Image 1 (spheres, rainbow, N blue to C red):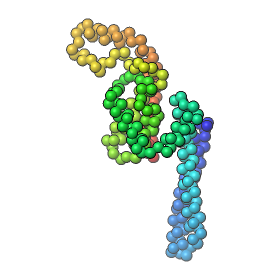
Image 2 (image 1 turned 60 degrees about the horizontal axis):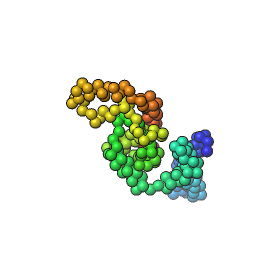
Image 3 (image 1 turned 180 degrees about the horizontal axis):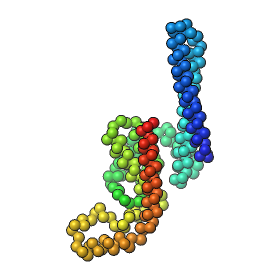
Image 4 (image 1 turned 135 degrees about the vertical axis):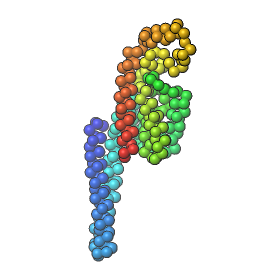
Length: 231
């Protein structure tokens, strides 16, 4: 579907959310008048019916909005339209234990594959990048544990370092993994060797181009993390 479909679905979703709220308030008002002031019970049932239908329609339109956005994201990651639709349906019916398993898998993956300034290929992840993010967002929305939320936020941000088409070899800014080198124990020849490796890094230009994607993803993920907790 066209991106504009998400805006249309969102508009109708918010419209019927107002019907839901107004219907609920009307039902309460007419219930009170029926109990204490001999008001017509029919008014109460009309208000209750409007509230129920409004809520149902609002949820349906907002789910459709989420589906359009999610499918577009999956298609951008290489899935076909049909595959994206099937994937969305799987996620829509996903249970909490399944999301928790994705989180556990990624936590174990991070323990085995710590990251600093590398850019890595998404194919190295234990699940689709979008699936891991969805699981993280879902878990954040269901907890009030500040420590857990912070851990999940950090985990989500590490996913920005995983981009499509990087290849089997991780790309680093300097071409040398400085985290495993104790510079204090190196002599002048060792330091010169590192400096030479950094200056002759054949992937520096490619790393810089991919790093712009990492920064863009980081901004997008941060915005979504903030949005999740506001819902």
